[in-house]
Image (cartoon, rainbow, N blue to C red; front, side):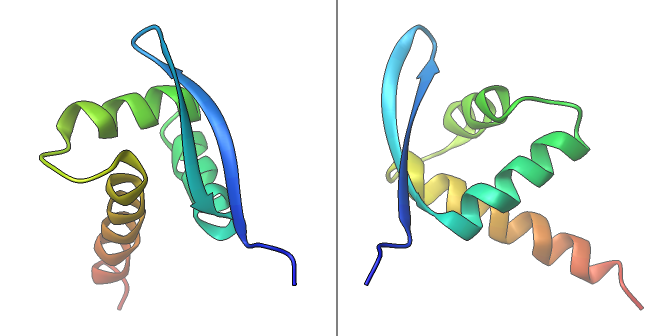
Length: 76
């Protein structure tokens, strides 16, 4: 079975880092960034700057989850 985890390299604050996320999370992260007129790199950098604890991958997952939870609250 093919892994659903995709590893990507991103440069944040001049440092190259590997991020492993599910393909669906990468897809949603790209949609969010596009909607905000930002790059994935910039959005990931902002998430990294505001995370309190845990790994960057976990922080990104929580960001995507919260984004869509908030969006869902606005639906009738």
